[in-house]
Image (cartoon, rainbow, N blue to C red; front, top):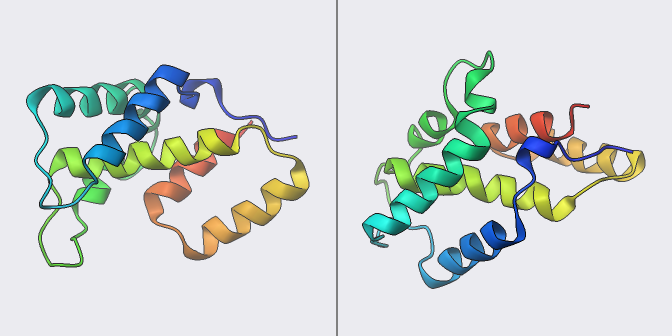
Length: 129
């Protein structure tokens, strides 16, 4: 059994608020967030990534890694957009919850083959126990 790391377990209220933000204002270069929405994203990032994963021995912070990417339209990502992508990865692993070894092996193989580097790092951290 692979248990989700407690440090990445989002509360129901946080999950609901993040899903609501994603539904109302999808993460794209055309979407403008209010100051309070950006602070909400930054707070979640700091709580779940900044204090844990970014302080490990990675070459760079996950938001900087995502920020180095571009939108398909060619525009660079802003910091809050990069952080929303990372928090979206954490939301995904929260949806997976605890995994059986069989299910985990299949998911991890797919993650290693095809997903973004930041998602690979989050999966490693979330289930490395």
